[in-house]
Image (cartoon, rainbow, N blue to C red):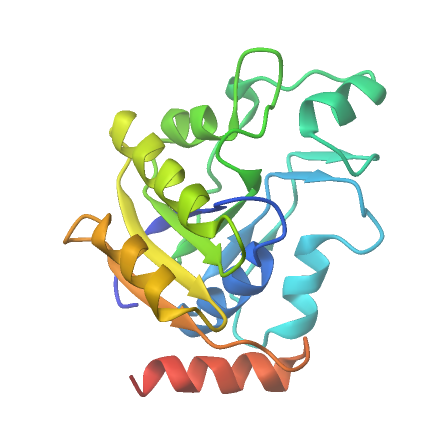
Length: 206
């Protein structure tokens, strides 16, 4: 990555590997990282994970919101007696490429009216969409791709995280815009710096 860009990493659902993929991309591109909203797991946050398993991430910015309960942000904020508004978020003035990781999928609610996809539109950012192979991944992938299309949000990269059934991958690829770049991230045997570096080296050699 030679130009300074900002990307929003989202997933086709929860637990598809957004944080791991964000860490690998940040390591690869020598980028900065920002998780604007951490809902639960404050003692083992996604930002902490990225710091732990990378060596070349230029900067890790503090979350805008740190909520105590591991549940949907709108509910976690309610439990903490806080409110989340789109206007609360401003992109850090990074001098390097910036990876911004969202929470869950595109329609995870931030409040009673706004979702992650609304935050992406508000910040006017292209999306890196992470998918993983499981029963239902084709449906979830195409729904996410079409949701971005309907909002005129550019899908800059599609990330296939881990091994994929060729027939499933083929259907997903057929629904991508021809300008969307495809990244295949290998499955990590262990979540540590050595495995992240190994994955980045594979990407560089493709």
